Each structure stands twice: as C-alpha cells, then as structure tokens.
Image (cartoon, rainbow, N blue to C red; front, side, top):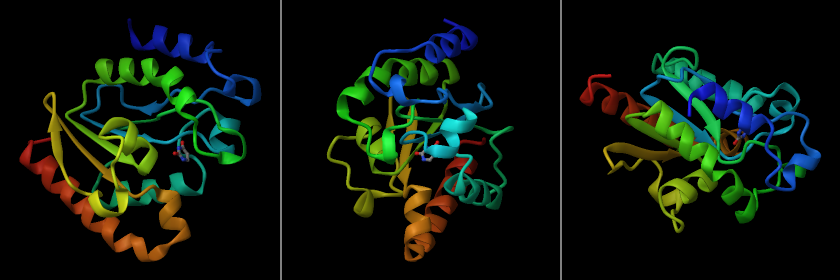
Amino acid sequence: MDFETLRKNCLDCRKCGLCETRTNVVFGTGNPHAEIMFIGEGPGQREDEQGLPFVGRSGQLLDQYLSAIHLSREKNIFITNIVKCRPPQNRDPLETEQEACWPFLEAQIQLVQPKILVCLGRIAAQKLIRPDYRITREHGRWEQRDGVWMTAFYHPSALLRDVSKRPDTFSDLLSLREKLKELEI
Ligand code: URA
C-alpha cells in the first residue's frame, strides 16, 4: 500500500470509539522518506483541531529541541503518534484504542523504513520498545531491533510540567546527534 492510500484509510477509520469525539484524524507529518521517526502518544486539543501532530505547546518545545541538533520535521523526520485520534480530556489512550490503531503505525514504519525510531514518552516506549519500559530509568538508552535503532525521550509535555527533566533530554538529544554521526545520516 502507498502512503496516500494509507492516509486515506486512516482518515476514514472508525475502528475505535475515539472516532466519535475527534475533530480530525492526525495521521502524521514530515518527510515520508525520513531516516528518523518520532512517535508520540496521541493528539491533544490543538492537534485534533488542526489535524497535525505536535502543533501545541509541547510541539513548539519539540521543534526547539530538534533545531538545536539541526533537524526539522520538513526535512529529516517523520512524526506521528501511537493513536491517531484525540483521547477525550487528553487521557492515556486505552490498550484497545492502541491496538485498533496499531496497523496504521506498523504500515507507516514499513513505508518510511526509518533507521532511527525515537519514542516520546512512556506510552510510546511501552508500545514500541517493551511493555515494562521505565522512562525515568531508561530514557536515552539505545537498542537495535530488526536493524532499527530505538530509544525514548521524555515526552515534551513532561518537560513543560517539570523543567528539572530538561537537562536529561538535552543529553538524550546529544546522544541522538552522536547516533546520526555514527550511522552517517
Ligand atoms: N502529544 C502527543 O503525544 N502527540 C501530539 O501530537 C501532541 C501532543
């Protein structure tokens, strides 16, 4: 399946209850040929209104961090979420919602074929890396699976709530920059 067909299927999706309350499906944005994919949890209010991922306050912070290591969503990365529709009141997406949405993310990863996958926050890390992933203890560590390097950073909304976590994320960003060098990206 090509990217546009996948996007159309995703925009029409009614596989879970989130379709009842969404304004827009948030499929993902960026370069579909990127070597780096960032994966968040699910759309918030602004993302639901605009149909684009990470456009609210946490997205602005994410863009600042990306530009600090000379990355931009247009050029070098593709950004999406575990669930493509906003959970009401920004609650954690339910396991059933994550499962219903999983085939879209799986297909996106297969089409983009990233060399690096960065999970933003616990929910994405537990879905993509390991169900018992501990973000506080394990953020910034790298592991390779099926030829793809994977890591997790604190979610930018956690960095907005707790600025004391920001230096750790800065180190994680530097480790991403090192990984890019190592892989000659
Ligand atoms: N938080 C997320 O996890 N994803 C978004 O797209 C926006 C906020």
